[in-house]
Image (cartoon, rainbow, N blue to C red; front, top):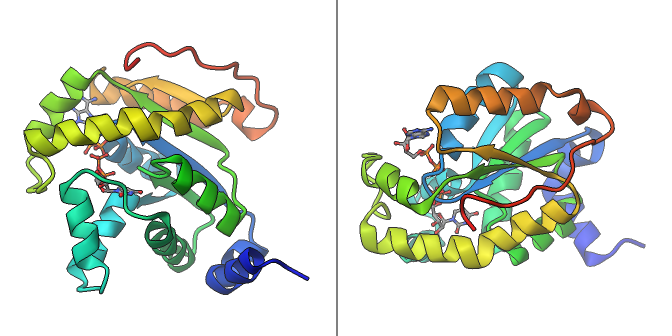
Length: 221
Ligand SMILES: Nc1ncnc2c1ncn2[C@@H]1O[C@H](COP(=O)(O)OP(=O)(O)O)[C@@H](O)[C@H]1O
Ligand SMILES: O=c1ccn([C@@H]2O[C@H](COP(=O)(O)OP(=O)(O)O)[C@@H](O)[C@H]2O)c(=O)[nH]1
């Protein structure tokens, strides 16, 4: 007999996660550290499908969903949307992609996100790509991002930094203890950051035994 989680898992994952081997890389880092920019590069070179949790939530608002107002309010306050909502959107996007290799960008953002994703999907990330960047640089980038995002204002940016430090970094630390974090110096120019990213995706270690040792923090901490 399966558990309720197993039943929910089967129902929502359908054939995709039951029958195919699914590879997931979590892409984490502070707001404006360059996650989305580098994910676009990784997609072109390594055949992953890019799933930005933030983009999926913003699309859900636009679609006129019943959760739209709640999601909008959370984003405007820099708060983390309940994992149930985000995980459903991620699962749907995974199913619809037809791919089995995913970059999950900007998720999991807290311990609840992480534990729920693992419980529902039974997926463990291959590794976690972590973009390390100072707040000063991230703030500069966000204020000139110019994508018309309502949350790219100084007041909300400060709230997002606080949530990142208090809730998201512990998730990175959780995976660091497991030897799964690949840290990138994200303060460098885009091309140089991508060279470092490429080295990780082409590393022999990622195809078999993991030889990476635990990361020692610098930049953000
Ligand atoms: N290495 C970099 N150096 C300078 N600017 C960058 C770099 N990476 C990204 N940017 C710019 O900074 C802004 C935030 O990048 P983005 O990829 O949207 O970050 P995130 O997805 O982590 O919030 C964008 O305007 C982007 O063009
Ligand atoms: O899994 C997620 C991803 C994003 N967000 C919300 O969406 C906002 C923007 O996230 P995104 O990853 O798009 O941008 P970033 O903050 O990295 O620039 C966050 O501040 C959160 O309010 C969330 O609640 N859960």
